[in-house]
Length: 338
Image: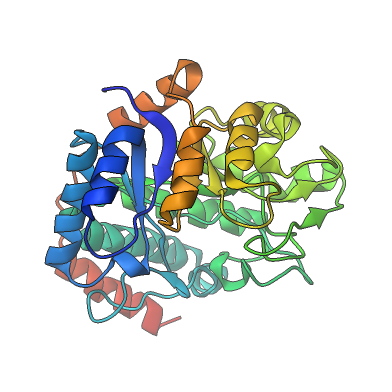
């Protein structure tokens, strides 16, 4: 691929402005991410996606979105159905494992029916966090449930459904956000569980899906591993846990660099993210001044980061021949019986 920088950017609105085109052409982000502010109708989304790729001269530039279902769903009715949250799918799994796994697979395959024709190629799903009692509800119902086995099994089915639809998943939030006692959009959570507790529960789903092409980091301090820095900016956590114990060798992107769990200005945060060992920085809000600061601190993809980015591009496949109408009917039946 042509040279790209180690960043994924959002944009400000429904169309790409001339200034944004020029900025993206100069800053050369590896990919882009869409949010609700970028969504109006299907033709508009497809045009925006094409304009984003055109701005960097790369028709294969990944286009990401968070389309989980439940309260994190960027495309909403009437464009697409309102899909259930991960916890609803997890509840079905607990009562009927086969039905739960099938529902998780189908829902991801339906996401691909919704997204892939628009040019969106990456869905930031599955959520592999394992919540514990008393944790902040920023994850909450987004998780498949409180069992590491449930989360791993359902996460695998969800990832496979996306890939069957020609899309790639992002496992998140590695090495685990389920114990966080604060919303990372606003403050920094500190998890005090022991390394043994984390290994036995929180890391399990990520180990099970360590072969996926992409992962998103957690802005969470794990005091037993690195009491000074959240995972996103912790070389110890990335080297020893994410790359080491978990064994993930795919592309590691940060969670949103503009979230206030991180300290310093966005340029300082970006440098810390890359220095710690994340391959790519994610910046979501489309604010030009912040994007310029992030770009100023972002290197070109090189070395292992470039290898992993190229592996992502090579991993995209073609959608299978599933029947959309048939799967929608089957999914409705599974959820109605839950």
